[in-house]
Each structure stands twice: as C-alpha cells, then as structure tokens.
Image (cartoon, rainbow, N blue to C red; front, side, top):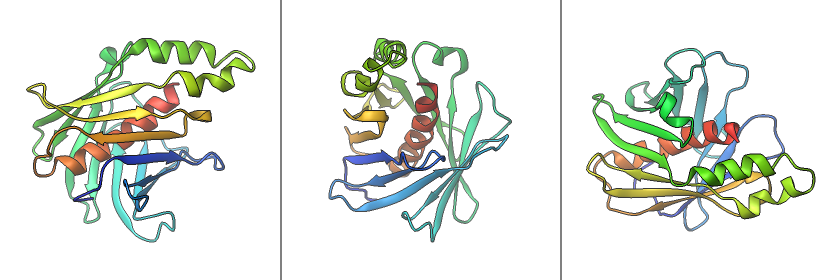
Length: 198
C-alpha cells in the first residue's frame, strides 16, 4: 500500500457474519479488502488485494490471547514484521487511545478519539427502539493520528450511515517513509476493535 490517493473510504459489509470491509481510494478504485477471522483466541485479520481475496497482502495478529492491552503485529506477504499497534489499556476506557510502532519498536504515532461524548451518546441512544436506528446519522466519532511531536498526520471519521458502515481517512500532512502503510494498517485494526465496542 504505497502512494495511495486520499481520502480513503472504509466500507463494512453488513451481509456477512464476519467483520469484513473494503477500502477504496479517492477515485473509487479498490485498495484492499480486510477480513477478520472469526472464533480465534488470538485475533487475526487478513488484508487481501481486493474482494476476490486472490492475493494476501498483510496479516495483523494479536501478540497474546484476547486481552485489554494486546498489541497487533503487522506482517507483509513475506512474513516480515513491519510494525504494530497497541491499545493503551486503561487510557482507552474513556477515549480510544492507541500507539503505533515501527519495525524497530520505536513509537511512530498515536491515535486518539477526538470526543468521547459522541461515543457515549451513540452507545446509550442506540439501545432505544426506533431512535437507535438513527444514531448513525447523528453521532459520528472521529480519531486523530499524530506524531510524538504533536503533528497531525491523518484523521479517521465515521460518515453518516445506518449501521456505522462507512469511515473516511484523510491525509493531513506529508507522510514520512513507511508511515502511510503503518497508518492505514493501524486504523484498520483500530476501527475493527472500536466498532465492536460500540
């Protein structure tokens, strides 16, 4: 995933039991297809070239059994580790907080939820009959991706839609070498985890 044409769109499929979604670029062309394996003690996600799933590009796998603070390791098609993202346990209870690392275990960037109240309102109101169907149009969380020096490099925002199906990733600053790939993989894993939380 190099030289991508931003913004990217993540669109979840609602017709399958699996937590699958496609990624398209600003021109509507497919970038990849993401499939989360079901019923695994260690979470595992496979990133394919497209919906045909004919070519595997990456794997994302938890480094331990289902855990509050698991790290998710990214490997390319050769099996080489290219980075990882980790949920910051207790810090993520109120607002989602993840840290991403490069292949040398150096912190690369941080992903944070912009406004925790949006998620709280969405979670509470989505449980109400009829009203719950409409929350996807009114409560749309967003997440910022920043470098350790505070530079904003990307944002991910849920778009107005039923069932929380669409998310947009926008580039905010020029990427450094290798950053684009790790940012997109980190956001893929994060949105799978956060979408499950509500």
